[in-house]
Image 1 (cartoon, helix red, strand yellow):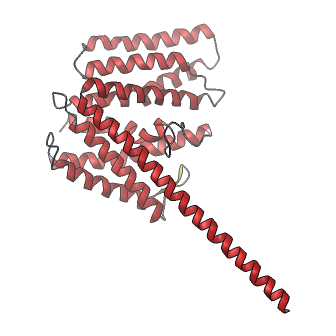
Image 2 (cartoon, one colour; image 1 turned 45 degrees about the horizontal axis):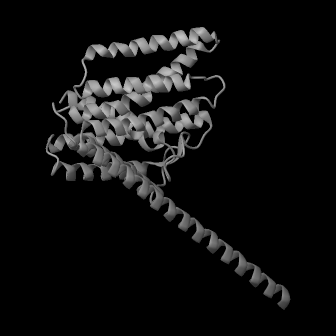
Image 3 (cartoon, one colour; image 1 turned 90 degrees about the vertical axis):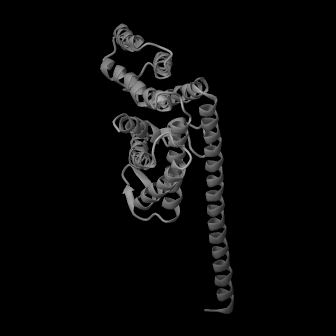
Length: 300
């Protein structure tokens, strides 16, 4: 090889290494920025939930009315991406708000349980509206609309029941629930990102790993134990059990939402939360884990 060719090869190699270094640096910088954005968004949501729970049932109920309405809007918007699924978006939203308010008033002791029959009236009204349209996909349309109420509205409304499950309103259980949920999410994200190698369920969520799953469990256990030293409305062993339920069913909720988005051909349920996507992306773990936590607390 001549001197000129050798010199040219050295220059090209140097440029290549420099380009690789810049790409690596940019990737690291992008990762750090994403972590900072996620952390800030998580902090803001933590403050909102903690402050609303501390202020009392009306503030907590109002905050989660907002969350549930946005989440239901995202769910109906996802399904409208598929032409064969045409939920009654705005009527479903209006009825969903009414259902949330009925459940919120009931769980806080502001309303008699007999008024829950209004939910059946809303369901029948939805059927009548579909009958008027005379569409061939009537059953699918109604099913999607109803499922939005079950999948989104009911779990968000149950946060009001969690706050009152000991017989009177207490901020400890809802705050503790969310701190454990977000500790699990953070642990799974950090451990999975920097240590994770073994895929958990690659067909549904390519980024989830078994290492991340166990990392989230450890973070959740540690958070639950610390909370049990200060939040004494339930004993320490119940806090630990709640953390296990959240770790298992929270991840199942995350996987379900990932499959839902994959089926609908979208990356995120929305874009309202920087670094997270939509409300459903942020609270997907709650949708599956909160009903199971309440089931556990009701029988122990």
